[in-house]
Length: 160
Image (cartoon, rainbow, N blue to C red; front, side, top):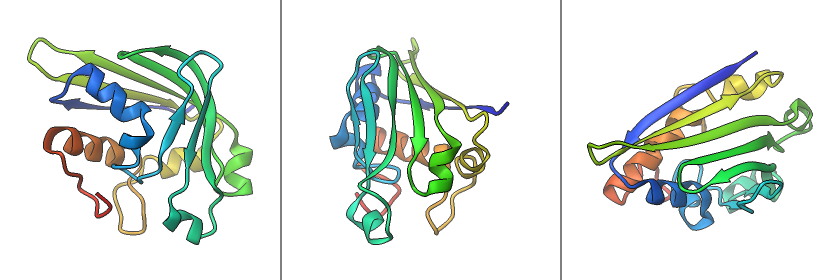
């Protein structure tokens, strides 16, 4: 069983963090710049679209899909999550993501992502790698880029 918890503290409101996680306009600006589309209700769909550059490398239009299991704006989002990059990644099946946003009295929020990657060793390996120039970095990269964007208006990546 592989369950990983990634957390970061962000000087932003819970509402701003929620919007940055669930809005395609925001998700297209940080991390891997792939717009995420949510139907924010239990049973609603989730999909993440490939960028033009990703499609040039042969990735499908929808690179990640899943289902919303719980949506409690702006504090908690639970969903399934499956990569569609290759037949092998698709065959690993769905993993489970839980986003928890907790405001503090100090004026910032704790964002924790719990990723249950049981039975998905390829995803577990890839999402926990350090940043590299070939596109790696996983959740730590995504969270760092999100924090930088919300706090400064800029990202660490070249696409913003």
